[in-house]
Amino acid sequence: VLPKEDKPSDYSWGVDGCPVVVDVDEDVADVRWCELVSLLLKAGAPTVTAWRRWSVNSIVQYHGEVTCGR
Image 1 (tube, rainbow, N blue to C red):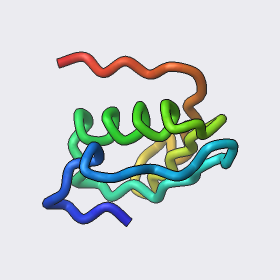
Image 2: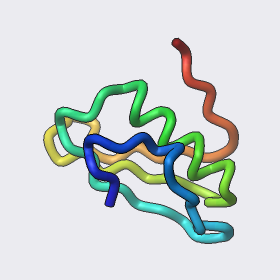
Image 3: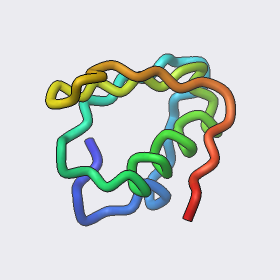
């Protein structure tokens, strides 16, 4: 859904009221992932669930406000 060369902020996320599930690749940078989650929540998604098949914690759910440290 999000090409690697694009920034999450380049898109308008029409997810108001829709729970979102994202299949996260192993090579996605933490800062990029944090920005995407934050934007999806600000766009009105009640939850964003990360499905990371490669991780020990393969499912992580976010809700509320996410702040990205830089």
